[in-house]
Length: 269
Image 1 (cartoon, rainbow, N blue to C red):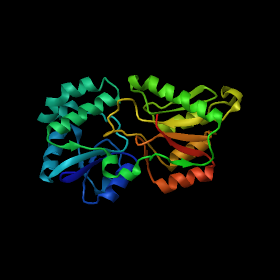
Image 2: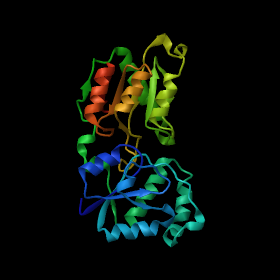
Image 3: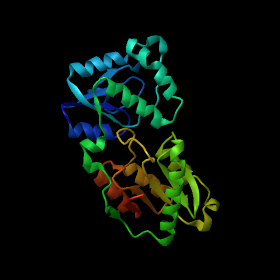
Image 4: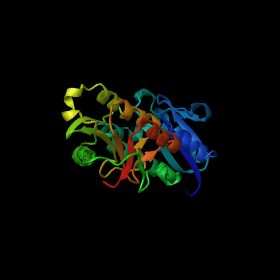
């Protein structure tokens, strides 16, 4: 980092972890987007993005991290300031694309203002799922076959920019992550009747970055809530992509996996 950091804090635990690691950072929240850091933030409207840029420059910000779940807020075009009006055509076009296309456009806009957009993993690298991470019993031969099938599925949907995770059991895909996120996927799997799991095998949840994904924004992450949801869905374990998935609250996540008696592995895809 060249200078002061700004954290654009959206929903979830990641912005909180980043703020603890960098308490001197400028904390920014956006109208219409939930954030646990709202009480300690400066709050802005996306319609007035020029105001946001000026505030960041006044605070001598050089680097910015987008952290947490960034949903697409409803925008009021009648409230656009001049800078938002200037980028509106690009924004409208990007919003017809998947999340990656939209996020790349957002990165471009901030870089054009002279800010370096960086990833959370560059600031707190210990959050990454490291090579050799192995917890719980060894995956069975069935689990290994399921993992291979899940990787095939994730690589297949990557060009469509759909999601970062899937659940496979007995060679069948029980669900893929979409805009509703991991929790919704695992609830759906938990509610799937046993007759759809061939041989009543348990299945595995696999989480990985999309092929070609810009990891500075929307980097995949798991935490203790994910682990408990995997266990509640009756799955045997979790595989995450090495160095391309964040583990939030590592101690609680590993402890939850131990208590649930499921395996957790980091693998290179």
